[in-house]
Amino acid sequence: MIELKGIEKIYNRGNEKVHALRGIDLGIGRGEFMSVVGPSGSGKTTLLHLLGCLDTPTGGTLTIDGIEVVNMRESELVRIRRSKIGFVFQHFYLIPGLSVYENVKLPLLFGRTEKKIDEIVSLIDLVGLKSRLHHTPNQLSGGEMQRVAIARALVNNPEFILADEPTGNLDTENSEKIFELLDSLHKRGIALVLVTHNSELAARAERIIRLKDGRLQGSD
Ligand SMILES: Nc1ncnc2c1ncn2[C@@H]1O[C@H](COP(=O)(O)OP(=O)(O)OP(=O)(O)O)[C@@H](O)[C@H]1O
Ligand SMILES: [Mg+2]
Image (cartoon, rainbow, N blue to C red; front, side, top):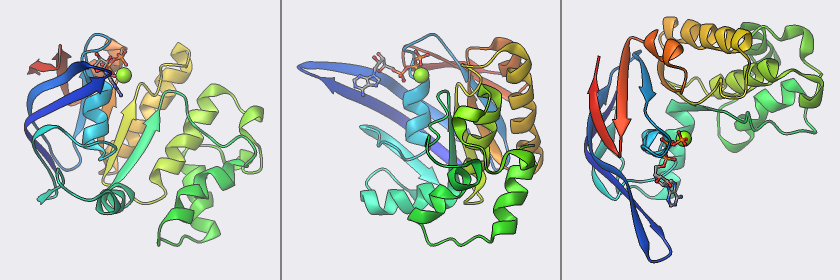
């Protein structure tokens, strides 16, 4: 469970202050599937970064499973991020020289979690790429690369998957498949926050929130 109260985010850009979020109140329940829509620059990515402890707000309170994270040290944030949250991005961010298997396993290098070969392979099987274990990213399609990124996001057994435009680089057919894969994770009990410009996909979430100029426009 993530709870935000009066969340503000101001970026400093030279002498200029950019007010990216202006008082967000929001709760995301266990296992919930929520989509986030809004114009470019409305604060969607900023919100996702705060939810995922990749950045800290400049005002307000943010609790994850009852723990206040706003004033935490970076080392503690890293621990929360690793144990509870998986990220999926528009540009996949796979490591070019590593195989599918090695890319999925990568996050385990930085934490204490151990996983057996079988467990990694079964995650890759879950995203439909068991026959591609030893391929490198340049041998995969965009949709397949995103599947690898999703398997990698799952490797630490997260409670939340935060996805920023995961279908932004994909055609309609692959977008649909990636959406279905994410939805299947939600059905397994993982909470999902999906930022997307695709209003049809957004409408299929349990809840949509709309951002405009850093404010919530209401949800349905
Ligand atoms: N690191 C940063 N430094 C300064 N300003 C930033 C930074 N990141 C974002 N901003 C600004 O904050 C505002 C919100 O940006 P954000 O990336 O959250 O929007 P977005 O809704 O994700 O947009 P898009 O749909 O284009 O991805 C924008 O005005 C942006 O220029
Ligand atoms: Mg964005």
